Length: 428
Picture 1 (cartoon, helix red, strand yellow):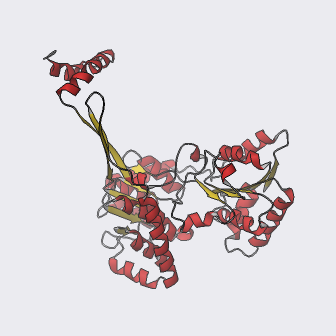
Picture 2 (cartoon, rainbow, N blue to C red):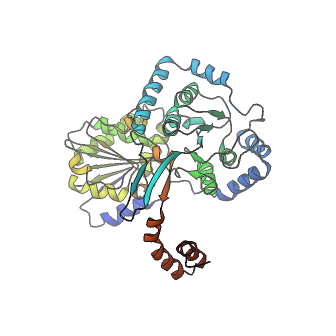
């Protein structure tokens, strides 16, 4: 863990260098992923099966690749009642939050008599990648599938690496409205969703997190299909004063550190004694944490404490542009309202980031790696598209056409100009 003092003459340069450090394993995966995607596009399911056996050590066929309804129902039944109830509670809140984002169609007539407007429609189909192993979380399913269903997406296809599917994941898929589940993972799953592979029909957009190979595959198929974003390591910034309980803030910082050794947790405070107490509480909590290996590596290598006046916190947060930021303060809006770059903002001493991960209703799929400077978290809008609409009668056309002709000719596009001029009796 690094400690920075805002008053140090070298602070600006040192802190900027810290933020610029690479937090992902430098692995050249693009070439390997390109080979997989080309094979899937060329060979279809045969390539998917071959790579699944090579990478996941699991043989799959077209007949058994899809998770059956009986398996899903058995998984739901095997899920503990309290977990099912929590999934339903979270799904309801996520659905309600995202339904409030629904935009309205618009139609109006301007001063020239031109009827203009736009119409929103849902995507036809979406693919959701759900990681296996340690990252097989039901919340991943809910946060990606519930907004898609709320938007009106007709087909939601979920892919996840082969192996035993966790009952909670199956229960979440059922609650979220997932249409079909395929036991396929890795770059080959992304290829199958993008190009189609045997019984796996192609989709219009792929969302959901994955490892470096999945991320590279999403990057390479963009343009064939849409994608949500390129996920990086998790991040949290906590702005806190000395009135907080150190163990609360320590737990908040570790809530992201436990995700991945490359995750980043940063504390900004104006109280050095409090900062030291938080660091001690982190050490104490790490000793009993099941995810301590990843959390300790994250905190040791990428964690930081910044000693600074609280008034400086908004500028620091904007510089970091973190995935999550908590303002654990009284009247937190005073500072939080100055933040322009953050995936999600949590206000007050009783709004830990963990609520946003599960049950608040807002989406936990958020921009990382400083992408909050130019992008937003997953929302209903990711599953909608907007079509513009234009209608002219003769009078409205006459008001617009002369300028259109001039601009078309200025651009050297005579067919464009003729398309307007011919309606004015000026060309043939």
